[in-house]
Length: 306
Image 1 (cartoon, helix red, strand yellow):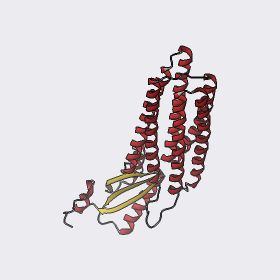
Image 2 (image 1 turned 135 degrees about the horizontal axis):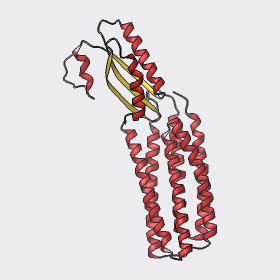
Image 3 (image 1 turned 45 degrees about the vertical axis):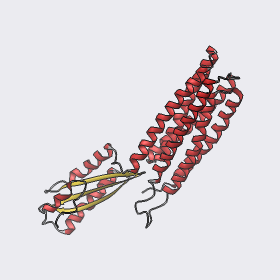
Image 4 (image 1 turned 90 degrees about the vertical axis):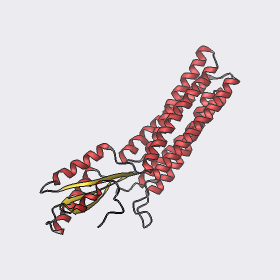
């Protein structure tokens, strides 16, 4: 498995971007008193906490397997993205509360041009960093970096919505528009929180590998299915950037142990080539033994006679 400690620097990039955007957006709020810009600043605060969580997860996940964690530490990235989803949901709630208060007691928005300029500058920073995180996260299969990048892109679209709301106030003079747009922003943030939480939960419950990887794995096995060889009980699961594939190879009972072992080695080699992040486990069984077919289901019954 490739060393992943180099991913930590991208988490630091996210932290620096979050600090810059918080300062910029907070400045925009103080000069304009726009609840939309305040919602933007709150979201950037969540970005900072999420980036710190991603940094911690990537540091832990980069540690090699040990006696207590034989399968590695990368599943911790799901905890990071799950925590990020929860923080995003809290930010959405905070925006709703603030926007409703402003709807009840509207306040004028001042110095719109300056506020818009600051928010636009922050959005450009977020967009650039988000594209880097998404590219690296997808290439290196890091859910922590990818979730952080998706979060920043959410922030970019949020800022676009805020700019629209503030501009609408400037054009119409109707101050509640700013709060209405902020409520729409909160809904969008909450939706993205749901997406991140759902993906994190699926990772924690050992979801199977993606369909395209499963198809590649089956294609890698196919050339070995000659001379009566077959397989079953193929099971897969994801664990951060790692994935695990196990299967039972069924061969003629007259084969020697060496021949069966050679087949298993060849299958495992080709599976690792087809799915580079995979750790592969194979089990050799004789075709003629009825017990070889017991494990076709997901669980082997405990009362099966041996």
